[in-house]
Image (cartoon, rainbow, N blue to C red; front, side):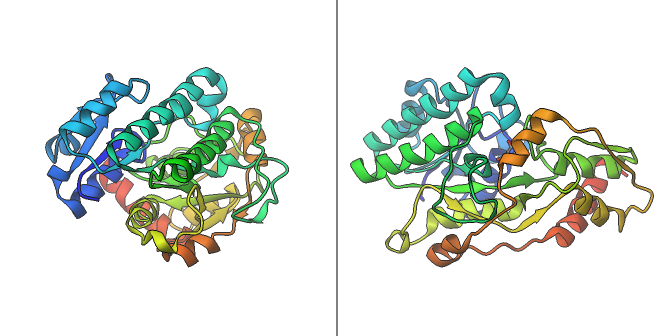
Length: 318
Ligand code: SER
């Protein structure tokens, strides 16, 4: 990775991934791709170049790739699961038509491509406990359908054209920087904000609902180490299960309560989110990622909670 383009650099993952890549590869070598209306600001704007790159506009991608001599693309343009259900055609347009443009440009200019998949690529028929790397997927949400298609199309471009595509299936990602928008796992971020602000948390997900989650530093580490990995060791490509923790609402609540004893949580289940959550794995088996590119997470629920509360308190002045 010499010159990297991050498409969606102002989003939930992109904003932190761009900064982390700039730390490792130098500011000038990492281009922050954005769409009109979501322009980079502050550190993201000042620490390196930026370029308008809309995945639905192939020319905009091509111009950025040519101008900055890009050899690696992180394609993070997507709608999260709940939003995708209300805007299915937009989810397809960004997720799949957009991916097609990215892959075509990558094929023409010889770029490697990372386009994340998700726990959302699984469905009700998937084995939910220790979900294997290769198993039944068949999701019924538009988010999931675009993610399975992303995996297949990315593999197709590798097998047919030799485009170096690689990806992970991200769990719900928890961070204290850019909040997520419209995801099923967002509750696990929102709960920390409520705790720090001294508000009661209304949980949209039912007690006992297990989902894989991950702290942002581990998610960034995964995205970078996979792209740096020796390709001769990769048996899989699109996309690797990665896991670090799996919990239900009552477990994260109890963990936060250890630090904020007055914190209160009530349940008000959102049927759409609950149905989506019920179709996703309880916990994934990530042994292929561990074996093929030495994936290893740093954070568990306890250490993430300490860090989240500390960072959020500092940022919100609490
Ligand atoms: N965080 C995503 C969502 O909830 C899952 O990958 O939509």
